Amino acid sequence: MTTDTLPSESPERLRADMVATLTEQGYIRSPEVAAAFAKVPRERFAPEAALTAAYSSRDVVVTKRNATGRATSSVSAAWLQADMLEAANLCRGAKVLEVGSGGYNAALIAELVGDEGLTVTMDIDPWVTERAARFLTATGYPQVKVVLGDAEHAAEEHAPEGGYDAIIVTVGAWDCPWGHLLAEGGRLVIPLRFSTITRSFTFVRDGDRLRGLDPTVCGFVAIQGAGAYLDQEAALADGAVKLTIESGPTLDVSALDQALAGKRAELWTGVMAAHGESFDSMHLWIATVDDRFGMVWADPERGKDLVTLAMRWYCPVLITPDSFAYLTIREVQRIDEAEERRWEFGIHGHGPHRAELAQQLCDHVQSWDRGWRNHSGPDFTLYPADATVPEPADGQIFRKRHTQLVMTWA
Image (cartoon, rainbow, N blue to C red; front, top):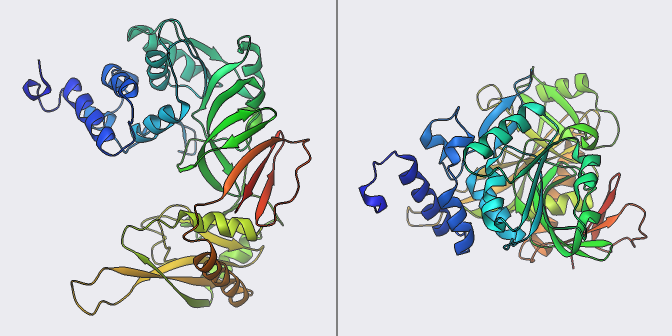
């Protein structure tokens, strides 16, 4: 039977359409990954979602929330799962650890490594592991080893002789204690957070260090347990606007609240962006040169009259205990309708140091535009925390408990 004869909203038709979309968009790049996505029934691992939602190529399916409403478990967006599996470069017989479970991604891994391979999926939440084990057995993947435990330490207990060929982390991690569990040349795919930025990295083990390949912009449910790390967060205007910074002096929430309600400084950078043009490397550059770098977020309804952000998620901001300045944007007037749409980056500053912060963020944006905008992007290498690493001339070292993430602009 061809997919043309299937009902438009049957799981089989939706699955085939998802595979076609992911292939067309370049997230599925191999016949092996395509076959895995075509076979594993995604809807069986997300029974709370409508079929069309389960098979959306772009959307996350949240499966559990905590008391505050924040997601603690989910089925990741299919495009990101495909991209991470392709990056892991899995083959038949490979030994793979998944940190952060749910079942669906483990089933895809099991398809790729075959019965001769090893798939271990681990999660700290017994609700998640019980559910994952049940779904995996019901869908024909009882060979997947589902482990309940805090991966910060428990992953060591289940490592095979010679190490894993790949480790895929499906929770947002601030640190990476698993590099030594990789075989030489093995791959670690991990959404790693640094300076409030999250990127999905592919690292290849090279002795004691892990060499990074091109990272992908992403977002994940935060890791729990011993590996958790809480950024500083200031909720302003009853949570309508939130500022987040990794470290630095303690934020004065009351002062920042007053700053938001007070006078605003405004600067325009002269730096333009075309419609649909990516400027993700701007975040990395500002984080390289300024320790006050953080993120600002606004509630789509309650915050829209308080701040005008350049982007809805992950908008750059410089933050001090009582002031902040963030990236904004405005459309450039066109002479005629045939002219390409363009936007100009600007800065809005709040608080007693608003003018100074706005100027400094403006300088960073202009510096990125002049020197690094058309650059291939920084290189990343992950070293053990006790390794001796020279300070890069153009770069930054993000020091963590187990590792040091070195970012260099060559």
